[in-house]
Length: 159
Image 1 (tube, helix red, strand yellow):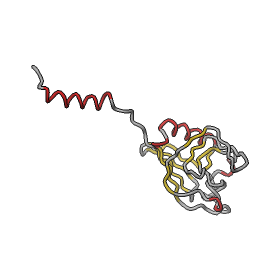
Image 2 (cartoon, rainbow, N blue to C red):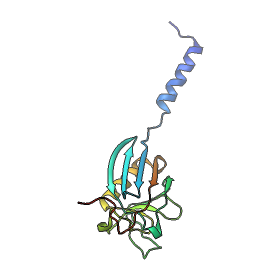
Image 3 (tube, rainbow, N blue to C red):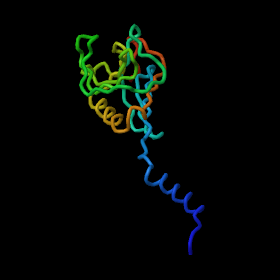
Image 4 (tube, rainbow, N blue to C red):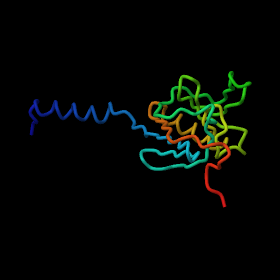
C-alpha cells in the first residue's frame, strides 16, 4: 500500500521538527531573596530545592529589590570597590555590581551586613553557582523582595 505524497510530507516534517531539531529542555531556576527574613529560596521548575540564610545590604547600602536575570558569573572575583574583598562564586545580577556570592564573614549570615550584595555561606554559594552554570543564566531569575531590617534587630526570632 502506497501512502499519498500530500500525507507523507506533513508527517515527515512533524517527525523532523520533534525529533531531529528538538533542543534539550532547560530547567527554570528561581532565586527568591526575602530581605526582611534574610532568607534565600532556590527552586527549579517550581520545586523548592534549597532555603538558606543570607546577608543583604545594610540600610545605607540597601540591596535593590525587583526581578533580575544574571548576566555574568565569576568563580573567583575580588571587589575593586571594597579593598579587593573576595567574592567567590559570584553571580552578578545588576550592572551596578550587585551579586550573589560566598563570604568569609559567616558570623553575619542571617542579618544585613554587606555593601549591597547578597552573601551566602561558601558551600551554599558553590552549590548555587554550579546550578546556575548548569542551567544557564538566561534560565535563571533573581527576585528580591521585602525591607531591610535594622541591624540591631535579629532577622529571625530567637529563643
